[in-house]
Length: 320
Image (cartoon, rainbow, N blue to C red; front, top):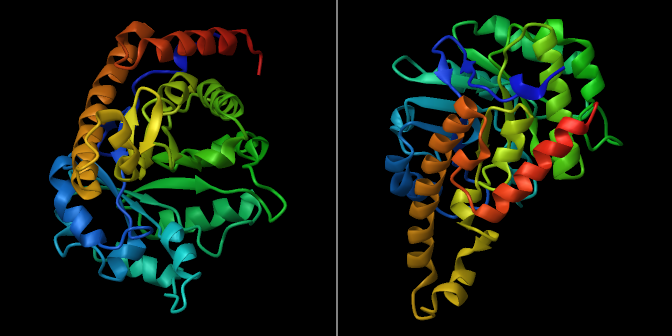
């Protein structure tokens, strides 16, 4: 099979939201003032963003959270809940709390809801699918993103074979998602996993978008787009500066710009706004790439384009 169909524009759910989608995430995990962060930067992410149902439930988002963006990915809260369990005063999280958030959503915004994985991780794929389908059936008015997890404590990567063998069960979902690191131990192995799944989806006539959770790095995203992925989210844009050399800590930028007197907070604000501009420009150039198939259309460093051309050549030679 030719790889020409791997990277193309797809659409998410009933609203037909076009991909590729680069979705900035907000989270209370690792941020002392999550409400302040959201209020400061959500005006720049009004097209799309990801928020956590855990943060909604515990009131660590602004009260107007329903109006943060036209397209909101509502994560099921596992990321924050596992972090809270490490605290001296942990906060509980369960499916009932997630459902209460879902039932408070209302109308006026396009939502993509992520299936519940907290306390359901490490379960066989069949049970994950059954639980995800049950949520889909209970709230059919929403589009659902099936987040697939590894199948046991001894497994650190997703069983792609199990997913590929049951593609017929995925038609009910608006997207199928994976945490980036759980797709493989290297960029190459993760790209091969994405490519394999996308090729099988194409063979089955399924045009379901693939969502890569925890990846909003402008240098990695094009690799996965060319492999067949469509939706990306992450917190990198709030934690590091996007540079041609990769992600750099905000405080380390002082050694690049030479202004060692600038407060870290001010430098961080400038970097976050620059990150948003980079993501917006990259999303536009990725759409050009999908139309032309020409890597030259990507807005990224020339050295990265050279590496990407080598990647696509190697990908084309692979029979996986």
